[in-house]
Length: 211
Image (cartoon, rainbow, N blue to C red; front, side, top):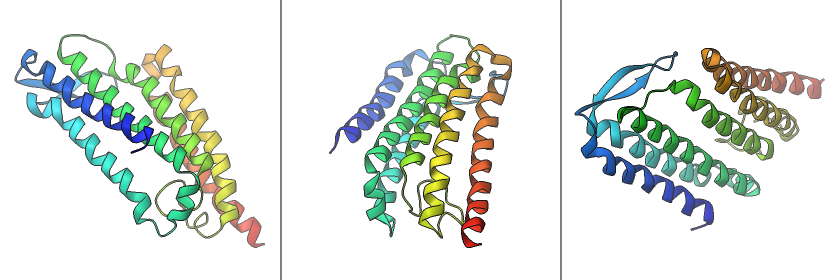
């Protein structure tokens, strides 16, 4: 087990431990969903509300650990595995942070959920940008368009650009902290633009190289 695995497992266990600690203190029904204004608008039984996110985190962690083994191009994945493992830690930390915010709300604290999620989304998008910027051609990780998957050169150029775009999206997500009324826009719009820009760029670059 490497250090990234150890940290991720500690975060996973922490999610269950925190849920167990607060279980007796929460009502039978807890808030579990928030609308675009950051207000609670969905509820579920206490056990589901406290342990569903940790359980989903375990399942996603297992999937993320499995994907490189399934990839026919796993030798390429090995070239950026350190960055991939680091992103898994960032992702599991994001899930734990979301879980902690959910518990905080249900023990009586009141805040704009979207605003408080902005730093977590910023870190997640920035981490994705670092990963994308180092990714080599494979079938599961990165900006997988028909054009990047058909050419190492197009893959590399697209991912260098995509890495910068996703890191910028991470930085812009932080603006939502100080402009809570527009927090959702600063989270969603930049990352959507980054994904679309990178996809279009991959097509244009492929056509340019084919000419």
